[in-house]
Image (cartoon, rainbow, N blue to C red; front, top):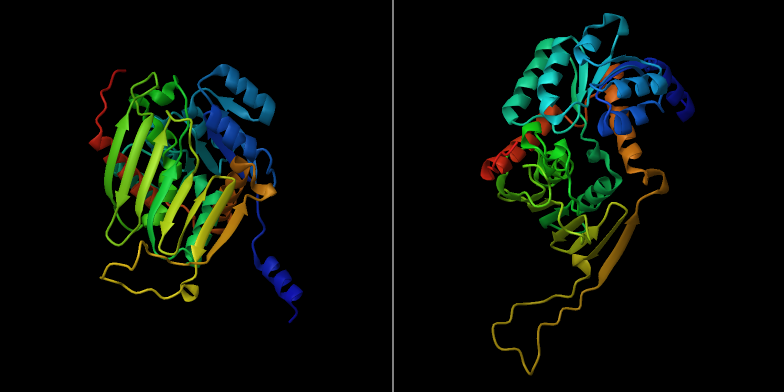
Amino acid sequence: MEKQDIEKKAAAAKPAGRVLRLGIIGQGRSGRNIHAEYLKNVPEKFEIVAVSDLLADRCERAAKEYGCATYQDYREMLQDKSLNLDLVVNASFSHQHAPITKEIMLAGLNVLCEKPFARTSDEVKDLIGVSKQTGRLLAVFQQSRFAPYYRKVNDVLLSGVLGRIQMVKIAFNGFSRRYDWQTLQAYNAGGLFNTGPHPMDQALGFIGRDIMPNVWCKMDVVNALGDADDFCKVILSYPGRPIIDLEVCSNTHFSPYLYQIYGKYGSLSGTMNRIEWKYYKPEEAPPIKLIREPLPGPSYCSDKLEFHSEVWEVPAEEKDLFNSTSARFYDNLYDALVYGKALVITPEQVCQQIAVIEECHRQNPLPRKF
């Protein structure tokens, strides 16, 4: 049978896709600028049929932009059976993520929750239990797992050219003075809860998603006007695994790298747009031997290694990071809901992340002021 005939038969056997009806809770930066702005551009897969937001003007804006029903009370949206919702995107305040996600599933609806998923790992385990009890799909928007730079770094490591990896440094840094609700502990906010889930999810992929690593963390409030962290340094370790050195700080102008990786045969450094790595091939390396006696003359160790250098630059079609990662995430979510495929990012994996973040906060009990 010709290849084209095989592909046609496979396509015919695949169930026809359908448009999923969505409700979105929250029309702030996340609910509108990330989720709604992406979803409105894929009408063949998703239709925004309802939006909920506390602010009346945001509801009015959503009605005009998406032609959808609007509610200032999200519970009214969940109870409106005429909407026939397939999925609810929970982009509420961070401290409401866990309780509202639970309400959504108990209302018989599938849910995609924004990060941070919850404050504690026990909350995550409870949500996983509710998902199993109700039979509703539970997903978490950790779209940076699909970031092109992260995928490329993984490709390099899996190729083995750098050899055994001793350390991975990740720095999601900048300089800012934040003054909104994302600076308040009462809202499950701060740098580690807000920005941190992205690099933390990536970091756990390097040390392993099958263990609870040893955690050392230092957190502080530097420029934020609230009482939640805007400086965070995390060290993760586990026997036989690479050391992870992670920073999420808002008080440095100088961030020459996003990633630095130390390997046996070479190293890697890069940003979201450009990655370079340099390595030698063991089979090309000249033999060396241990010498216990003083080396002759005013000499020093000489090791003439030939290093190979490679460079990757983000493809033009993936330079829009939000859209490229959202597209891959939502494609997987669509396939999970329509075709029953497995989620790439599972709630159980996010539970490991929340457990690490929880331990970071336990080690750094910052005073609550608000």
